[in-house]
Image (cartoon, rainbow, N blue to C red):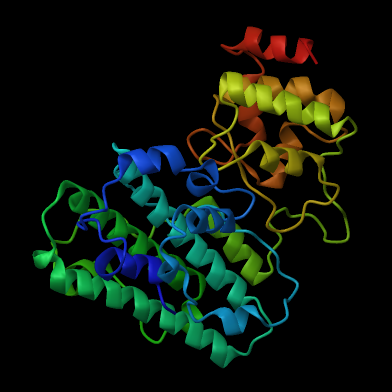
Length: 356
């Protein structure tokens, strides 16, 4: 598999030390929401990149997975929109840094999603092994090249920002692949000592490259055919929405705008509306990451209950789809306990519901 975008940072048209690399005005005027926070699929980022840099067609050459992507689909369908492995990245300061930050972050997600879709086509075990082993080799090749040539990279402020971002996202893509498909690896999974010590020729950092996110568990369970929701597959599960979808979406939009209902880095208004109105929540439904305090969320649940036949702390707990501001699964006990107190933003929440 050819990792064109990643390689372009080191050897191609996106070298951060190139004379035309810094272009704050251009990126300030042209970075779109879809490029930075794509939805409903990660491919929206790639479409935005093609529009942004239509002057660089070499960035969009075939990557080698096309032959697999052309095969018939199986029954698995899921869009990977978020990291499967936790990473810590320095926040961008300039708009050029912002371009590289979202480019590399979203490219790693796109590659993981693309491998996932290829692995779920109608292909044989030998082809699956080829895909995974090629991904591992391509990632390690890039890390080795960085380790070999990094002393020769021109010392610029942008280079000092971009190269660590590149390294982190290459390792993230590598570990996501190894964690999802261990049965197809040629060797044992990579370690920090191998990646940083042997390939990058850098000191071993005190970081955890193995820590997975809730999205990993969702994707992993899909591959294993495990139903997260613990309901008999013959029984449909939904929250039983019985109102008008447009009204619900308006309420959620206003709650998100005024009290930060959702963690918008991980969950969109449309994600939540889709989960709340689904008549049959299947494996791989969008996970919902709350951005407000549990106290506020509990009060909102109580206000929404009248529009549902099955939306309450118990069904929210059972769905395994909702996560708190701190990233913990929301349990019925915490919601029932929160009901004992008035939320800090009760007036703002009441005002939104009173006007609809």
